Amino acid sequence: MRIVLLAAALALAACPLVGCSGAEDSDAKFQRDLAAASEQARGKLDYFWEHFEAGQPNEYDFQLKAAFPRRDGQEGTEDAWVENLARGADKYVGELMVDPLYLGDLREGAIMEFAEPQIVDWSFISNDKLIGGYTTRVMLPRMDAERAEGLRSMLGENPK
Image (tube, rainbow, N blue to C red; front, side, top):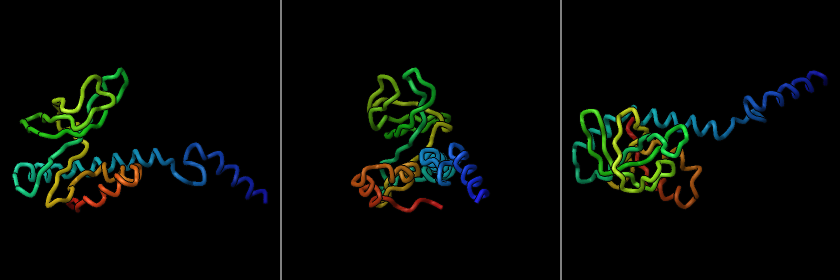
């Protein structure tokens, strides 16, 4: 009995480190899943650019998600989707798709310049299916049910 109580006490003491009941902190897991999704997307960035440059009529809405330095006096970045892309030798340009939260007075449609290391995700539509959107797929469980279901119905298979 004493060993069981000691084991229980040790398990409770470890809660702040590993999460109570052995469950992992959901926010920390979410952040790790987002980081892994971003790595997957970056690993397939050449696939995105191949399709972007091919100009097929059944492929459109090419978008990149990039990490932009915050402009609200806080450390860190804000990930934001950009569209209407232009690709230069060492930089990219696109328009913000929505009003950002932490990028100062920038609004939807603002022209953003960024470098490849800032890219965290990509997507485009091919044959009416969303290709890419690696981080979006991770975020589905945190979205309201109607929006998540709408996105799920659009998802296509990502490149292997």
